[in-house]
Image 1 (cartoon, helix red, strand yellow):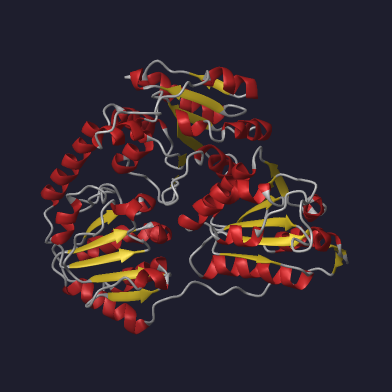
Image 2: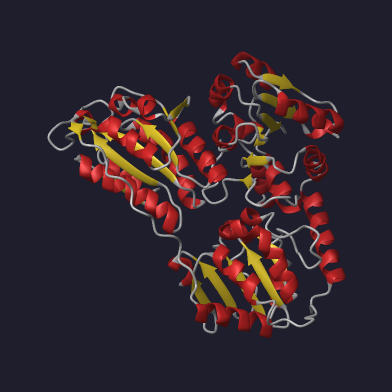
Length: 528
């Protein structure tokens, strides 16, 4: 049956598997809201468009599906651009659908008018396009969803003129079978296995792109006697008790020397970006096998490297099958005692750099169930925890690594909690970052989410203060007056508690998982 195009888009998304949309209705995008309930989609009302974008991001990371947000013309899109940039940077499948003005060439001074809204979104998305008819709108929706399933995930933006959203349109046609991610052919698999088995001191680096192969990754390591690192996004892929596992300490300067000992590096599903290393070079002198679905990453190779355009999960699973037939009592050349000593030294460095945080983080970890999903913000607590905290499951800690925006954790955790009703979700924020998106507490209360929100309150921008001191700059503009976070939480209708000890903190987190709504848990460095 014919419906206004705005309604048809919702029906199309539902037919493609979309269950939840995050957003805020406005006078320009009301036609997009006509068909949401009729299509059987749940709408989550954010308090700010940036929050809607982060919620879609958190939902996408929790489910592996598309996170969709509906936004209005102009300021609605601009408010969400930070979230879209974060999703682009961290390879997250977020689709933003917005209204736009019918004419920006012949008219000026219109409500929400921008010089070029589509181009603005194009600066933070994989692509940003305008649909001036139903057929183009449907094609763009499928382009985004197929792209999420078959290549590196990035945020996408579709805008539809207000008048076009209200015009009657036929429904979208049924979806075609989407292509999968690229896979290595038999010859490439054989070349990879040959090189790995020929190496005496191979080392694997597992990134976020290999999370789905966590159940076989440690087996492959044991078969090959290889050492391993994970990036922050790859934590949980390697079993914490694997004796040749160096952990997620790639950003430690000394890791360059360790990697310099390898005679082969196998990097799977990782950019090895600045946020992974905090240095210009990995430190290896040996050839590298680089497995990625993004050809741009593979173009960074050197002579002697083996670039493999393939899904890391599929390749690892194929290796787990192919290697046993080739291995006979292979003994590792890495020294397990040396690996353990190196990790202990790096852990001590983290403790010295950020006094008190490691002890609090380890107490928190002990209170969490293995299936807890964590969303963290740009805060010193997370910076330390990401190095020393061995995750029991891969893909269960999400951080705004690339774009590095404050305010991510609370709305993203809301999106994750919506996706995982009945399963534990935790948000970790600093006192400053919490105030970027504190208004989304209203959404969490409205939804009745059992969400612990741990605020690490050191009363300042401590990371920036320390950076100024290291640069011999007198600390400036790093201390701000904080509100009474507990009173603020209660004003929104959330629970609020300030534990006086680590044991009380653990009890508060456990209680928050069972509470009928979110709970703000304020923790200060004095808790020890």
